[in-house]
Length: 156
Ligand code: HEC
Image (tube, rainbow, N blue to C red; front, side, top):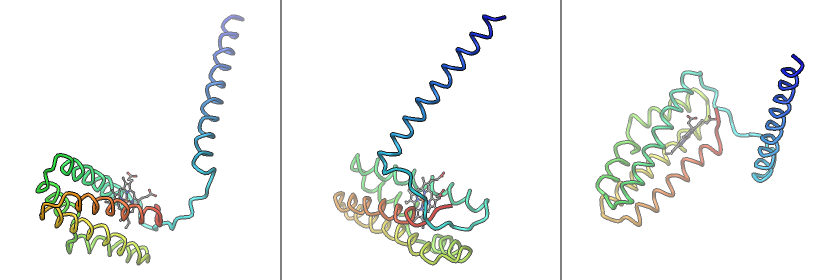
């Protein structure tokens, strides 16, 4: 019995040691990133179901960015252009979706930041169609920066 208890205590010690190590690792990581900073981005006050839908769409956007990059990497400009146009281009449906979020939340910037991404996707598609991979890559970099301009401003 005594032995069992001791084994249990020892296991407990080991476990708490492991937790302490994890904690200090996390601490170091956070300090490297500039310490503990408050998340002072603007909260988008959307219903939970809309937040889930928006995040689902976001993950699709990231997939699209990956697919465009892969097509440009193998110099398939037609494919890169088509993906950019079809999945991210500016359409009345996209306009409606972006405007809806602005309407519900009262955050006008959401629609304009969204439009900037979609219009950049069209510019990327135009450059790809014209056979200019360098220009298409420049637009891709700008497009990703546009994604992050919105992430820098808004959160759920
Ligand atoms: C107009 C605003 C806006 C634009 C533009 C935008 N996003 Fe987002 N994105 C958001 C918001 C808001 C969230 C939710 C952040 C949170 O959870 O606090 C988000 C979250 C995400 C997430 C995390 C999804 C998850 O499952 O948690 C990914 C990935 C993402 N965006 C990718 C992209 C990519 C790629 C682009 C550009 C092609 C993009 N976003 C453009 C507003 C935007």
